Length: 379
Picture 1: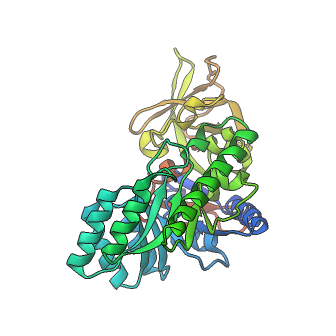
Picture 2: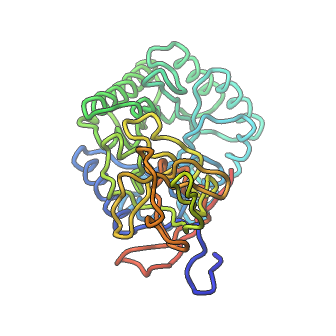
C-alpha cells in the first residue's frame, strides 16, 4: 500500500467500482431468486472478506473455495460452511480434518474410486468423517464421473464403507466458455443441470443420500432457465465480470467492476505504440479473449471519460511493461497520450488479474476513493 509523494496510489494498482460490483451481485441474486435456487458464491475471484460478505448477502448457505488457504481465511472471519471445489489431493486430507476441528464444515470433492479409497483410509487413520461431493463431468471436458458411470456408485460405496458421508454431487460446465451465443449458453446450462440431477438420482437409486446437487459457472448461472432438481448454484466471476464474460454476452463492458490503473511511461515512435508501467505482473498473462471474436490482447484500454476505447488494447506485455496499440494495427500518434497520464485497463479474466494484487482501491459514490480492501493469497 505504498503511496507516491503526491498522495496518489503508486501504479499499477487494482481499482474496484463498488457500485458496479453491487449491481452485478444483485443481478445474479435476483435471477436465482426467480428460479428458486440458493447461491453459494465462489470466493476464488475476490479472495476478500469485504467482497464475500456482500456476495453472501442474506444467504446463509455458505461459500465455495478453491484453496485451503481460502478455507482457513474465511473460517477466521466466521464463514464456516464451505465447499472446497477442487478435486482433493490426498496430501491435503489431514489439513481438511484440522480445519474441521477448528469449526469449519468443509466438504471435499473427488472423481475417482482410487481417491475415494485414499479418503477412506485417511479417515480411519486420523479418526475423521469426511463429507464428500462426487464430481460430475457434464460436458466431457473437465474432471468428473459421467452420470451413468458405474465408478460413481463404486466410489460412493468405498466412501460409505470407510465411514465417510456422501454429501451429494457437484459439477462445473467449463464448456460454456466456448459458447458464442445465447442459445448455446442456455443449452450448456441445461446440460449442466441434467447431468447433475441424473447423477444424483443414480446415487439415490443405489441407496445413498444426496442432499446437495451443486452446479455452477457464471455463464450458466446467468443463462439458466430451469434449475429443477438443483439445490445450489456456484458462481464467482459475476461479482466483477471481465472481457471474456462480455465477449460471451454474459455482461456489458460497463458491468466490469475492476480495472488495472497504470501510468504512461514512454512512446515508441517508430511503431506508433505507447508504453505503460503495467505488464503481466499487473494484468496477468491470461489471454482469454484470444479465442473470441474480438481479441483484446492483455486488456482493453479505457479513455479519460471512462468509456472503453474500441481501438486500444495492451497488445503485448513483459513483466513490468505493457505496450498500448490500436487493435487494428494502425499507428498511434504522439498526441494520443502524455507521459505521466494514468489509464485504466479492463481485464481479460477477473480471477487472474485480481490475483496479481494485494487488494482493491475503491471507487464510486458508495465509497471514498482510495479506500482499501485487502485480498488474501496462497494455497
